[in-house]
Amino acid sequence: MTLNTGNADRLDSELARAAQLQPYVAFADPLGSRRNFARSVKISRALRGKAPAEASVRTEDTSFTVPEDGRRIPVRIYRPDGLQESAPVLIYFHGGAFVAGDLETEHDRLLALALDTDCAIVSVEYRRPPENPFPAPTEDCYAAVRWVAAEAESLSLDAGRIAIGGSSAGGTLAAATALMCRDRQGPELVLQLLLFPALDDRLDSDSMRRYPRTAAWHIEDSHHMWRHYLGPAFGTEDPYAVPARRVDFTGVAPAYVLVAEVDALRDEGIAYAARMLEDGVSVELHHFAGGFHSFDAAVPHAGLSVRALAEQSAALRRAFARN
Image (cartoon, rainbow, N blue to C red; front, side):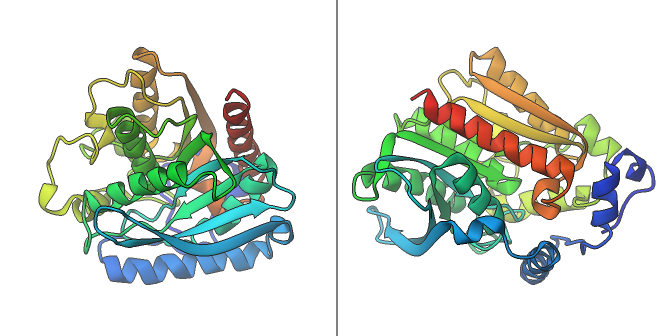
């Protein structure tokens, strides 16, 4: 990874050492970034070895049909051994700057969350830009929530305990999907889990200026990411495309928002959490000093990552217990 000498000393020492072993992935070229991103995921997995939860969580790769047009959307369902009937469920959207990533990207995180939270997880293979720009990815994510709610009984899930979440670009999609669920009268959500979310295409925050090049994210990536994702809609003020454009958050699902100190995206996550709070939404905001973008997925065995993953599980358990 390429570390800016102006911010390397702000990183947690354990994360800084591990970051040197990770290749940096740029997102100017979508096809190239997909190959490099997949390679980076494999390197991370090789460095940490087999996930301990793998033996205790069953996975099933399947798909569902979108009623409106008959499209099939692939999903991976995680179920811990001994999971109860009518189980709570997290519907998860992977990261990868919209253009990269797949069901393998956050497989280890989801294994751990499923086991620690004792819930089912549905990971969604949404369509990716630039071939399928907005609104395709967001509509796929909303379709997945509708499917889980409609088929909850046959899936042995509890339609009254549905959470959604995602990391980085997946956090963008989760935030947009939560808005859709509010605006389209359901399905009702118990939590939106927003991890390192990209929420504002204007890129004018203090953290964007302070941390233009960090261990896992460069400001150029934000420019490329939004252009690939929005395509012909670039410059839009549609809040389903750019959640920070939303004016009113009243009635949106409760949120857990995670941001990292040494991350260009930090301040837009903080601002989004504050605006939800102003509109009466219940929000937990966690700022991890010394962390970089997606540090908990890149270096899951670091002390800071273990704490971050434990807090994500705890937030989900509390949300499921309240309903």
